[in-house]
Image (cartoon, rainbow, N blue to C red):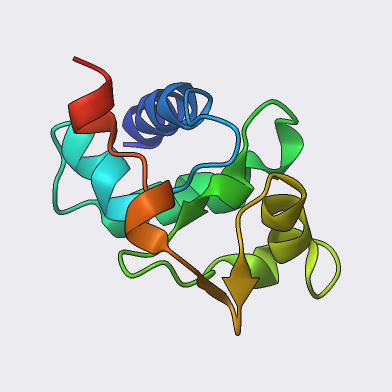
Length: 111
């Protein structure tokens, strides 16, 4: 089982690396793209475990309504928000503003 999780996590990281600068996606959108629609939580675990991989932009993955639900896994209180704002993504009260506008759907974008 551990090997399967590692492979899934690597597949999650491969998708996360494709999220464009200044855009966000959701845990569920990545799970759905990977053919594991009910595995949004597992995508969250992968993002949490990605801290050792500097090339995985975990800050660009939020929950299905644009809330920075994973922010407590980043060092510092507002690092996730600061990283998003440095890319031009507006965040207010832990919520991505204009979520529909900046949302990146891998199923639609990675044909």
